[in-house]
Image (cartoon, rainbow, N blue to C red; front, side):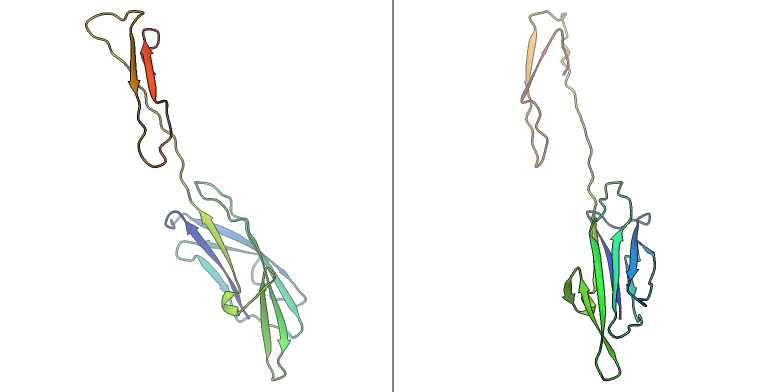
Length: 171
């Protein structure tokens, strides 16, 4: 029998520094231990465990979860997958595996844990406005108002107008 785990990264291409680690807990009398942990990287984004020995009337359970730390704009997938494999004697000299992923019966091709991490970037910006008065000094009655128009999808809203005075010549 066999099963696999796969890492999907959305929001940006894989980078050579990307490393995602998973723990694999094995349960069941005589269950083949595949690994305590697995790390996937760019160029090696999945891991398959194949040709594992299966005994009749045995249930093997593999609990897989991501143990990577988030950061650098990447979220960690918090799902936990429980892959169960039950061996049934077909009375023809072979044992047939039956697969369940989180309690749902699947075929061998779908006996896998797919973890999806998402990258998103955030940032901040600012701008200022300054009024320079030439030819005479500022007077306490001087007041200049500027309108501000925000354009672009998702652009943050700012004040629609700004007034500058002698006491506050910039905004």
